[in-house]
Image 1 (cartoon, rainbow, N blue to C red):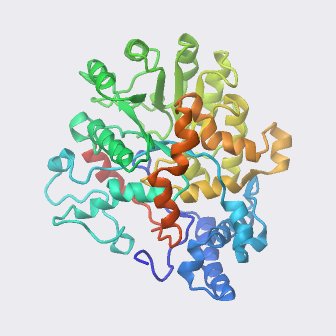
Image 2 (tube, rainbow, N blue to C red; image 1 turned 90 degrees about the horizontal axis):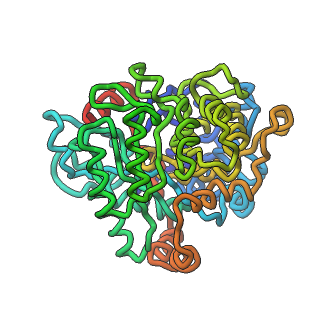
Image 3 (cartoon, rainbow, N blue to C red; image 1 turned 120 degrees about the vertical axis):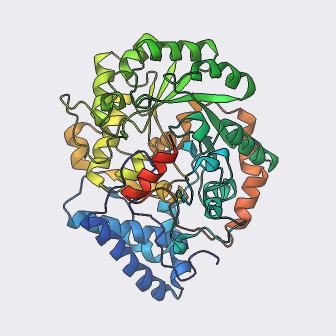
Length: 485
């Protein structure tokens, strides 16, 4: 195997990686404990099964044993509001483990990213800059060309396709954008569309959809919407209410926001994806909250508002609903309640980065998911992973397949049990309401196209890297944000 032949990396990745929109979160004692238990289990269980460590960790039993280690570490830390529902014997029984961490759900990831390693943005970097540099021990494989930025191929389109469509169970993905000035975009819409076409040439018909990035408070962006809508199959408009060229954000229902929504409606693209939560910093912080979501949804009932990250604040725990809290998921719930937006309405909560962060804290995960199902509705929570920043999304998929809210918490707060039917809705069925996919693609192409066949062949000898690519330290975050504009 080209990746990690000695089996040093765990399949469920607990580390400090950020998507570049929030400060990397240091690992707490329970996270170190969980990783330690995972490493011990890998050695002991592999030996019992007569396997080397790498072969064991690539298996379903390897993922199960890692999640069981997280259960033990979290319970020891007194965090029992949620847990990964896996039979303990699955760590030594691959078939049983597969029943837990495996599945055949339709998975539609509505937030994916990758970087063009030779894009125009690289020409604007300061001399000797090395954004998103990773340790040599985490290289994605052989490099592909000369130059000091060659390592960026690890987050280019080839590795993206491998991480998403070979190493994970993802069926479809929406390519999104990061907050930046147009000239500093690490992935332009032209490049995103080109990658979408590359996948189509693999007979992976419509495996990728694309967002149109709009910063309506940035000169020329509203006007550019016409050309984008005419040239590209825009699945939704993506915006960042906290972002602005002068550092000041906007509200969805102020003059700037209203013009943006009206323009989107006029162009016939009724989906608006809005980054909420994961604040960039204290400046214009209020615009990162969900206070305006209910107001704009009430004003435009025929538009869909997709709340990317669901308003989560990365470094604040989620608890029971608190109407006095002005940020986090509670701010989304309050905004919906105040404006009469009932569960199943025109507001959707998206889990990109949100679930990745919640995986670190089962209490917060239980409350966050419980509130979203309760206030947005079980049909209005959609799957996203923010990968490729976190590497292959397979570990997020495996963790969500097994996560359960503790019965005591469900009874106390009226939270839903996470049933297989509810998981299937979140994983992909809910997204079909807002990102419709032709029936022939769902019924025929996804199961029989070249991507599906390549995946089937690849999985006879899988070689996942188990690495993450986003910034892991404060210095790396500042470096990423500085070249993003």
